[in-house]
Length: 323
Ligand SMILES: [Mn+2]
Image (cartoon, rainbow, N blue to C red; front, side, top):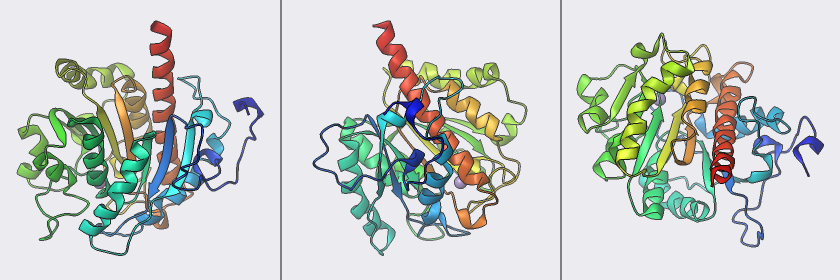
């Protein structure tokens, strides 16, 4: 069915109004290039819980995008994407949860360019481990968040939703020189906030972005990452978005909101202008719909992921046209 034949609104359970695929669908004959799966785990949050409901809320908020072409990229992901529903998560401690998630993540990574719906941000460590295994090399990271997530411990516990960047650096999963954090502003010691920077990465704190709006300004900020990726031979790049990168006025539905954050237009411009950097996957975490109003948080989340997907499809079309 072509995009134009699709209804303008879908009530199916999946992302963009798609029907959910049985998982794992071993009999699938034609695999879409992209796929979505939810990881509804929120056992590692520090403040308001509820991000386990994030995947369902993002899917619901994405329904209006089922027939749409992106206004900048002039394409739709609808014919290139599947939704596998949510991964199976045991009621267990975080290490066992990650052990249960990793084989499921690996199975889907072997088939698709994956977009993951969180869940709290602790899930990203499990995803990075499997991406690095799959690609046989560490990856670059573009990380949008109010929090640096580079705390060395989780209030005395070794791992939580605010430690995965620290753990990924320790495990050699990410290339610091090819990694950038955007929107950081939560209270934290300077040592913790600058963890990635001291390892060789770039940290753009929210304070430095208050007057950054235009595409030209964002391009200038992205240039160091672009140059570093090029110098490193274009390693795979992963996108991880915590919805709390947004100001709570635009994203109240999250567990640890931090005032004075980014606007949706700023994030959208950043996503549009970074679509050619060589992404191999993305996640969007920490949508907690119980604290949301009028679905504003999940709408922003759905539009960010849709923009990411449209940008990736546009890149493919552009590169096949140039070869
Ligand atoms: Mn955060």
